[in-house]
Length: 76
Ligand SMILES: [Zn+2]
Image 1 (cartoon, helix red, strand yellow):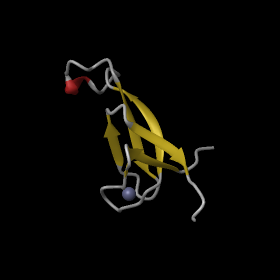
Image 2 (spheres, protein in one colour):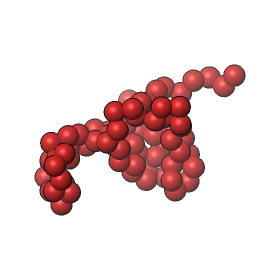
Image 3 (cartoon, rainbow, N blue to C red):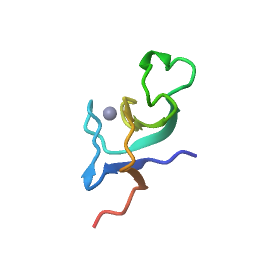
Image 4 (spheres, rainbow, N blue to C red):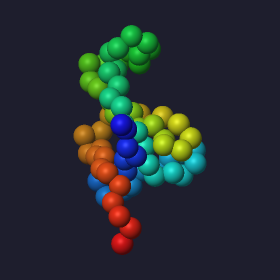
């Protein structure tokens, strides 16, 4: 079962660009897979991390080694 994840780049938490939600589903996206050829870039063999907003479904695509995801923590 997929569970909501939080995501951050460094110390900066990622919020959905559309609705401001802060929980996501994570999915690896191969940039050289069928349907992605239009990128036609030198880094085409890399994979990206897709973060799918848990609330509205908007997909955020990252190629960033500093991106990390983590399980929801309890409120302090
Ligand atoms: Zn959203």
